[in-house]
Length: 281
Ligand code: PDD
Image (cartoon, rainbow, N blue to C red; front, top):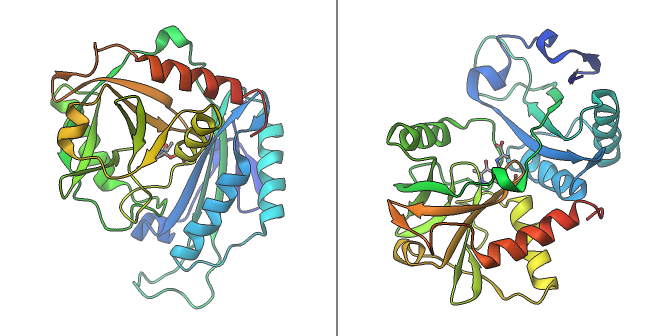
């Protein structure tokens, strides 16, 4: 049973209603988080709560809840949702303000929406390496804030799909930033490489978790710039996100990566990742 929490009330997601004057609708003026629920536990919850606060601070929106209140609400949503595995979406907008005005309302009352919905069970055999295309990253300069306005990400992903690919890896000034909804890793000469945190890419929770797991297992991880040509010549390419976990890429711009199937380093890291779901990180 899916569940929604909207501004203090619990309901079915299809019954949740937000005003047309909500700044989330008018301006895309809000932030969000997506968390995975495995065996009734919210995966990497602390890291998501930290990023939630960081996003709120970045858009100058006072948090309507303390960290402990968020945690309680999230756990209650999971308990009420009774879905396993599940995705928990949390959106906070600057709330309802009319008439429409770019200037922030003096007394904003943020809109808070949490939904818990069923997630597909990912069998390892379902993992087919992605075919991706590189595209110019024309998004705004604050990709590090998890904002609800995803118009550019949507345009880029849908362009890639219309051209026959699964997704796009984005290139800014000759360097990889991320994909349209995930972070990017490559394996080059046995070293795992991912672009460093910057204002141009989301500081993915999965990215951070994968780096920690790999380093703890003795694998070498470098956070440094990846040029487009290094991407194309990599031994392995993966994307990481809450939904995709660690997913291999088999082709970039029609060029086969490795032998086109999931690589050996991916296999080790995926084993570590799957194992970490059973231990609260
Ligand atoms: N997407 N980069 C972008 C642009 C993203 O949208 C996401 C997540 C990530 C990976 O972040 P994390 O590991 O914290 O999920 C990187 C989510 C899942 C979404 O929008 O549905």
